[in-house]
Length: 111
Image 1 (cartoon, rainbow, N blue to C red):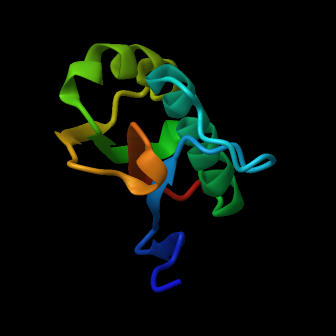
Image 2: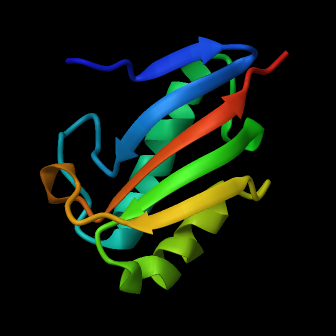
Image 3: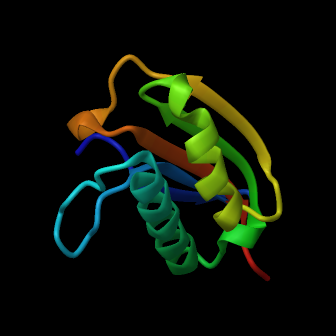
């Protein structure tokens, strides 16, 4: 693998993009809602391992396979990112494994 899943630098943790894949089964969620929820849970687990949490996220970058999915994506996203971090959301021509959603974050380290 030619990248890091997480880097801690300058009091921040930078996480690489997460897909909506269940780590226990390797299965990708079937809907944009399922994938968004699973990606957020994957991010939460990685942040916890790095000494942070979803409420410490200051920036997200969200990639959607189709921006027509945005409203459905946003409804689920809002349940996890209640602190309303800065966000960019763009359409990507293709995401790994045929995913509908990928999210990366930058968060403060708890302390």
